[in-house]
Amino acid sequence: MEAISVFDIFKIGVGPSSSHTMGPWRAAQRFLARLREAGMLHRTVRVRTELFGSLAKTGMGHGTRLAVVLGLCGEDPVTCPTDSIAQRSRTIRESGTLRLGEEHDVAFSTDDDLVFHNDEVLPFHPNGIRFTAWLSPEGEGQGDAEQIVETYYSVGGGFVVQEGEEASARQCVLLPYRVNKARDIEEHCAREHLTIPQLVMRNERVWRDDADVRAGLLNIWRVMKECAFRGSHTEGTLPGGLNVKRRAAEMNRKLLGPEKYAETARDVGAWLRAIEKSTSEFRTILKWVSTFALAVNEENACFGRVVTAPTNGAAGVIPAVLLYYWCFCESTEQGVIDFMLTAGEIGSLFKKGATISAAMGGCQAEIGVSSAMAAAGLAQVLGGSVGQALMAAEIAMEHHLGMTCDPVGGLVQVPCIERNTMGATKAITAATIALDSDPSAAKITLDGVINTMWRTAQDMQSKYKETAEGGLAIQLSVIVSEC
Image 1: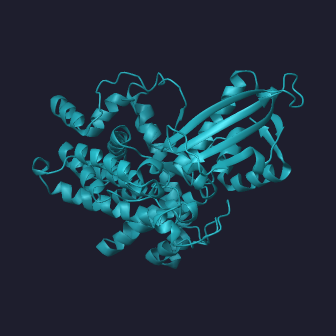
Image 2: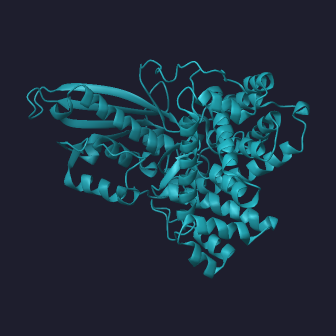
Image 3: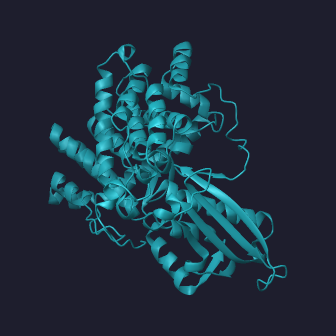
């Protein structure tokens, strides 16, 4: 089993999809780096990208083509200005020129150099992407140019593997506490008298010191808050062709009142302080949780900056539950860190024992996993034991088993955005139940539900795995336009 850091599970990037946007973007960057390291960048006269399986079938709605182009240009999803992404892509398409790595121009045709193989799936994973670079021996013209061909797979959550590559040194590190199953967590914590976040922190020290872990997690928390803030103050219609109306801003305005809404539009801190003082009534708090989740995934749908948690399609669940904790519970900054350490470890269990790729497991692998992660994190920071935190994760996933991934038009909008609100509220409910329960009396373990999720994924028909060919996706016909 690979060694997975909390910073592998939580990654800053752009929407709308970790596997269909972030993964291909990273794959394009890796191919670009391969050309540069081999001294072949300036000999390249043409680059063609081929998308296979789920990447091809929903690539238009997921912005896969755009992500590949920006990756080949040398842009990075963590730092690129999100407000100019669409225009940058249009400029490249209209000019017919792609500047590889911001330093070498090659002719580029959207129709000829970005190929969608809708009816072909590569053996290793449904999300396959192949790059071919033609090299001129003399640097001019194609002639009998050499070729460099590499194939990558976007395996969920922004993780990318190259065909035939050996496990990286980073993945093969020896951690102080080996964790592949939930029972490993229970055993280590019982023997060493540790909480889950304490255990995870000891493992994280293999890669970075405590100060860097803390700073990194607080930076991720900052990005989550800023994303929810933007989404809660931005109105309009989402791009892509479905004409979905953004709802978070209107809900935010109604909950705060027009005057407070205008006042909180200044900064995140003012907004959160106003929310904290706004209510203690259950129904209103529930509306806030939905607002948080909607806000994040509306931003995700239009190439906004989000955090994979563990995917982009499920990016709103954990921020919504964290904001619930921050605004309506006795919260601390350390609590946020402990929440994320706990949630990250739960996410890694699902990646190791099942999948976090909707193209492999349906939406149970995205919303289901994120809900389990959030439930465990919340149970932990509300005073739960190790067993109760794991139980919370099991309860949350148990009630997402079998959930299909059926995005209408291949867009990460319907039903994806609303599903984040459901995942968040289920996580809070699961944590609440677990905190009032005896884990030793539970009939199903977290390991059992992870195993069940994987078997369910294997039994699920492929049309329900992020192809837009089944379920809700066929209830509405839409002509998709890339953002």
